[in-house]
Length: 351
Image 1 (tube, rainbow, N blue to C red):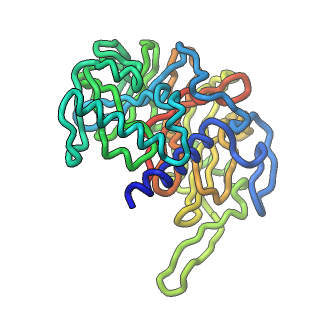
Image 2: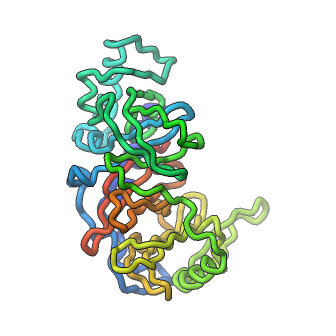
Image 3: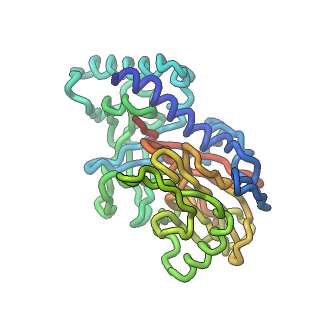
């Protein structure tokens, strides 16, 4: 059962997420479905067709995650450049895991009961899995600021084979000044001009309510299904958006204005389906860019998780969590000549 889940469900998630982040939504700009067929002005994310490996070297950026001891870094450029991993039958992913088992056995002892392995030194075989060498100096941005650090080793987690993404990571000892929560996502670059990662966004409730008011007419007709033990499924129309389902950030996202707002909504229609959107709007609620057009009752969703200026140019890049009901992954995106370009993806996981 584990093998079947790994080969088929995991790769289904992988390609769903990759398509969501890199290529297209199925609807035309501004369209919804059913009762919600309306069009909006603005640029759209879904016309963007560049692959992650088309990202120039000065734009390369990586996701890290604090595992309670170290920050592990997902080099998705290396991972996605391996064409064998794109084999939808799962054979390529099995080969990926098999190769890593062989490497573990070469430099240590592989044990099926031991999922985690650490290496202090760069091995020749690691070239295939990461561009980082021990001692490489990088900068890490989290909620508490930007800190210098250096690559201290490597980490393999064979338990992640049940997922659909990277299981080999570079590792960093977190700077002492950097306060991190377990599983916190950070952004890593070679650029010292990177800004602090902003996850909180706008906290003024009156401004939040104002933008909810701009969004609500677009959700007219959207239904939520809740299950009652006695009567079964009960449908109701969306009447309001809770703060838990709504994210709002202020800044410059397209470079057209410093006072733009990134608006993100994710609603769960039922157990497996979602309604979501990510827009850039002006202060009056006019849509400047449909980063993620409104998708109603979809199997997948996108939610803005944070914003960051990775190169100090004053324009924020957008971190999204792109997922489905049992998994997801992170993407970092920038506005690029009227379209949105995905710079990296990381920590894709699903069962």
